[in-house]
Image 1 (tube, helix red, strand yellow):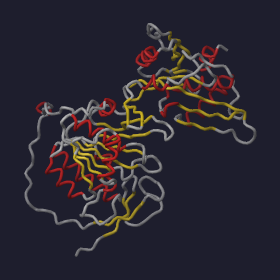
Image 2 (image 1 turned 180 degrees about the vertical axis):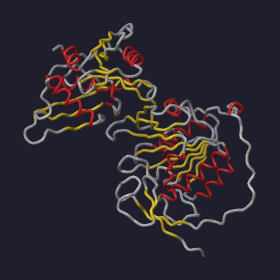
Image 3 (image 1 turned 60 degrees about the vertical axis):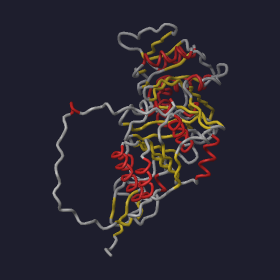
Image 4 (image 1 turned 120 degrees about the vertical axis):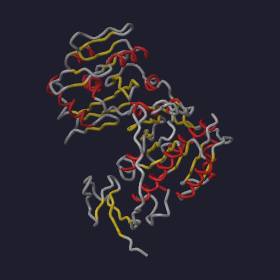
Amino acid sequence: MPKLKALYVCQQCGAQSIKWAGRCPGCSLWNTLVEEIVEPASPTSTRAIDAEAPTRLADVSLEDAVRVLTGLGEFDRVLGGGIVPGSVTLVGGEPGIGKSTLLLSVAGGLASSGHPVLYVSGEESLRQTKLRATRLGLSASDVQLLAQTQLEPIIETVKQLKPQVVIIDSIQVIETEALHSAPGSVGQVRACAYELVRLMKESRSALFLVGHVTKDGFLAGPKVLEHLVDTVLYFEGEATSGFRLLRSTKNRFGATYELGVFHMTAEGLVEVSNPSELFLSDRTDAVPGCMVTVTLEGSRPLLVEVQTLTSPCGMGLPRRRTTGVDFNRLSMLLAVLERRVGLHLLAQQDVFASSLGGVRLLEPAADLAIAISIASSLKERPASRQDLAVGEVGLTGEIRPVTNISQRIHEAKRVGFQRCFVAAQRGGIHAVDGIEVVPVRDVREAVQQALGT
């Protein structure tokens, strides 16, 4: 029997080392190297290989690239218009967030449309899957179920049934007999994913892989897992909120960073086709510290309310806490408001900032709304509930234009807002009927007009 070799592989970046180290030489993270047993390489075949003739780009046909609709409009939107035959999609999220519920709903919608679906459950028994399907109203669905963790029987079942869509829940529990390492290790995840992807490309079936995330919020396993697939989706949401957000971070068949919104109920996930109105439906009378902005999630404009609270700090260092707002952007805005507007915030005020609905405000277009809400809370002067602000704040206090401003303004008008603060541009801003567009040059001017000071 050939001698097996030990190799240490990073669980995050897939870097390899012949000896253990506390810090990965590839990604510089600590305690990510795990031992893997490497199988001896098989003898290389010496038979002649016939070269395949290349095909002209103009001769490649797209007639068979017809997308399959799942019945969930928000899910199809994030995928770019439906499932592409032969595509591989990785769905990640925290435990208990609803990944299995989402994909079981997708499987039920596909089966009801006459598309054969195979749902492989590696973490739950058939009875547990049946109980979830009953809660979702899919107890009489034609979805084919398979409770299996071995890769070889799964491949044989796929070859026999020839389903149009295969769902693996989850890839971390699938193991192959070719390796002796434990399920979920880097070698097992990489080998099983590679074999499944190759099978799907040959059979033209679509594959969905459920992946766990680490404590840092990244997909568990090496980065090569994300490189193998065509689409990477993250299913996320606050534990205390009923909203669930499906976000694409990679998509070879559509736009990246698209966003789908769902609402978790006792009967399962419900699509939210108009999230802007839903996120703003609980707004009360005007209170200090609130301002609305329009953020772009992929191609979708989304209205989100920003709330901030300032409070005099008793002693020691002032506290800064954020939820859904980038901490570094908040620190920068506080410095700009102190130096350019004259608000005493850095050493005298605790500042708390939050975005409602579980939406993360990552783009700089939310800077102006955050700055106005901070000034509103400090001065105890509320802004109008019919106002919103869109713009990036620079270090000198100037307001910079953002992309797709017309699309954002039209979304604000559709929801019912009456005034929008935007960056002043050369040549002016095109007026939009039904909403007043107010150009501002710097933060001081924006605060004065929004708060009437």
